Length: 250
Image (cartoon, rainbow, N blue to C red; front, side, top):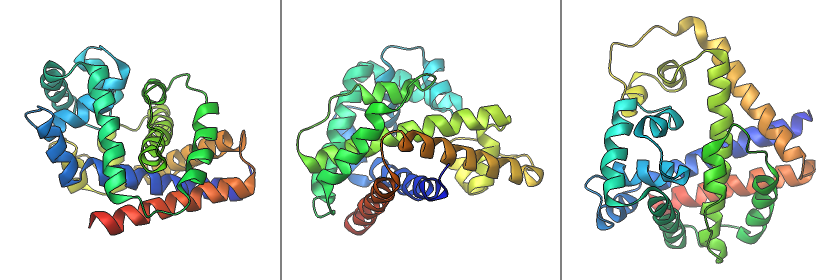
């Protein structure tokens, strides 16, 4: 694998992951979830995100959103799907993403180009073993370039997220271990996991390999449809989109 493509996949992937988090945790998005009838903003998040799977058992939603403590997902999914049916919740969530983008990302650079490159990747990417990515790819996207940019970024985010979860599972690393290795105990608690936490000192090399596997796999998928220059361009545009989100959402 071309190391430049791998580096681009790593840089772009970090930007896309962070961009999604900014929107998902933004006060305006929390307010929109409440305005949509959910009793808690995280009901909107869990139902909106996993709702792309359709009508599944709460435990299936929890297994798919594996980074969260399962009982938390089951609680929020059960309440959220009482308010909105799963696919309707997913359609609502992606429409809210488009509106947030119009409010915050309209000044980002070259959105049409970002959309074109991103869609070439996600349209061609294999979905076998990646049900949440497949579900998000099947959701309708808006025609305006600003709203569509965040929607496309979220589809790409689910692609790399699914690949990362598969790599963690193959390595035998659970979500608690991954959170502790990533950002520590406070980060782990945010996802609903309670102390006491296990020691992960001996797992750092395994976690580093998981991250490298994710980056290599993303690079190989990107390489199917983009040349090295285009892969670098997608990474740069992803970083610019993230920077605009940081600037506007502050």
